Image (cartoon, rainbow, N blue to C red; front, side):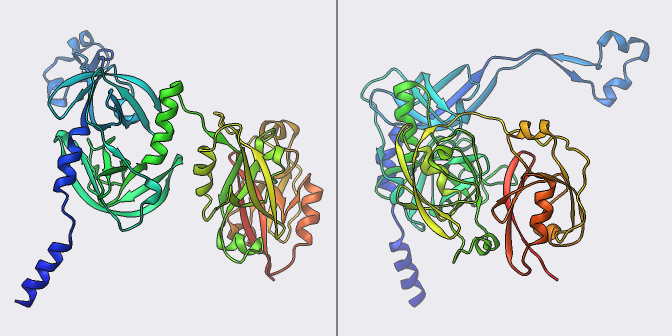
Length: 453
């Protein structure tokens, strides 16, 4: 009896989603796309089919041998939701990317052709418009009020099964994913599968707090971790797509990296935090504001930077041309800098070139380095540095320095040439964590070395 009572009490404490689903489902839509057929393709014969064709006649079938297959149109499916009564619909960019026709199916079974208002690849969002009036709309919430452990619910069309409801909790906030620097994802354990993309994520108040976008999977299906774009980020994108058809983002002009425990020690920080500046772009807003390589950005407009991934989200949402205040830690001191935010450009990082053959002597780092020629310096937009040609057992190898790396500075001291490098490494103190700035395949990063006896 005790077991029954406890079980009943536990069941009564779980949320009831029925009213939420009834109220919100009409504003959720199914999205299907089609693309025009490509060129005709040739499907190779199977081994058994080839054996039935005499060798003399095989050249009549062309090369490679096979039968010609008629091209077929491509189709995809996804979800979305209505954000205005006059027919604006929000979904993922990857749901409609490359489509020649987008069909939106409403809850009343109407099928409408949708026009693409605009799309933003960086945030994976797209805004559609259908010709209709007085449509049901979702209620928009505030994703910045979400808390880890909070119940959330998804409605979408996984595998084409319309209006499927799944529920779970928020398992983490502010997740940064590879190649997704400008979206602080909401991580949940809500079951999301192909076809859910672009659908809404609701809180218990029936408000949309995110757009279901990605899953972590090794099988192609749900494995317990899903990611949603915060609705605050999405609506910022929607406003720009409505107004101008494209999205602009704030740009600081720095390359940053995480502050590890060893790096924190080398910069004499009490704990790892902030975004370590590994490179400052020439003529960028950061350069004009006086940001330097080796600075640790600790605050942005009054918001503390705990992880380096926190910074791009904040900068990206800052209006172009607006001033922002940075708190940077430089040589142990906190400095306030004012920067006028620019517009994020599209750029391609340069790659490492060849260097001259003036090798250095063996040194306390146990690396052999050589001078850089003028062409390499110009290509990489650097004024100095030396390139590693050999790494022996010792501090440099332990720190992760590799052959081909360019050493740009040691302990905050810029390296102009081979002579400057040799002078610096000879005077490195023993037992102290020393930050070294390297350039690897065009990307700057700090590593930490400790000289031991």
